[in-house]
Image 1 (cartoon, rainbow, N blue to C red):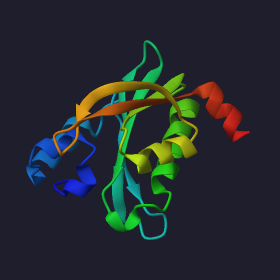
Image 2 (image 1 turned 180 degrees about the vertical axis):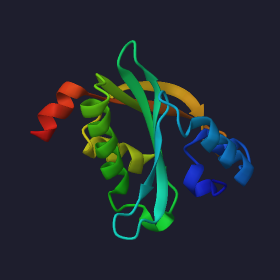
Image 3 (image 1 turned 30 degrees about the vertical axis):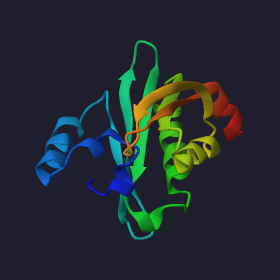
Image 4 (image 1 turned 180 degrees about the horizontal axis):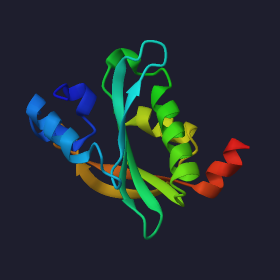
Length: 156
């Protein structure tokens, strides 16, 4: 969580994260119905390589925000993010009966944009100069989304 290359497209990069911070986060959200989050683990070895979070879930509108990161650099570029996005999308639509998922991606985060695109998400909006990069420059934020209807069409 303190490796700048791992967190450079997250707000975590603005602060040092301790084990205590991580434990407090886990205790706060590990049983949250509105913010479920999961470990991303390799199927064969069960090695924990990242996390994926849904939420907050807005049950009134049946939508949720999705975020994830792969913290294990050796696992980058292997399709694990796409797999995790597909799995949580399936769970969100089939089990939670949500209407739509969305996520926000820094424009420079090409790998994340590619993973969401491969999982069926489409760019819905570009928020111009929305966030700072580590360099101090501002950059665009992409909002991508996937509806249950589009997900159903893709899975058939």
